[in-house]
Image (cartoon, rainbow, N blue to C red; front, side):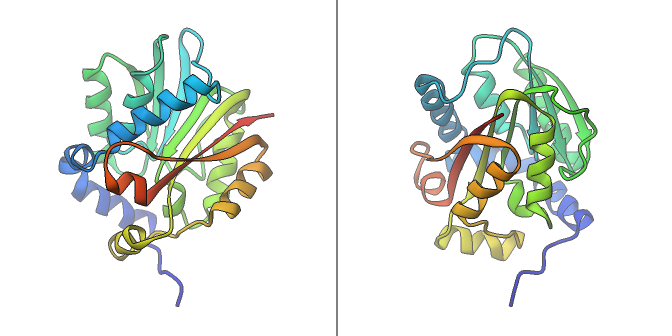
Length: 218
């Protein structure tokens, strides 16, 4: 049998319930360190360019902003972070965390499949473990690519197949997206040079449960 995904309202309620402890749990599991190491590697290799002064970044499924904080801590120029999420409590936590770090931010209570932005306006679009929660992940991916500037980079972190993912799916009822299928979907959305990057730091769960995909918009 296939998965029975939660509705948007159900997913928002699940994440609202988890929001208060989410950031601390991510830190305990090693995800902030894994994200920092990922951006170190991407920037050092030139796969990801540091946004110009005042770079505008969209974080889809922002959660408590762990991915945004990791990126902002690795680039010299100040960033403007805009976050999208279905969970009001997660958006509040993200806003507080980014404000505390001195990062200019705006939050939007919206579905990734229907982003409230014009085309080609963000220097980078990022998202961690968001596509697999969408009932149509490739519509979400197309929306993320639509708002990315030509030449801008997209970084998405997704679950990788294995025991950790199977256990997480019991709780969150998300869809595992096959690596080749996700790469093909990013290419069909208009991204080039798409590559997968394993998470190498932070501890066993990030390494075993997650993988990043990076591409640039034509």
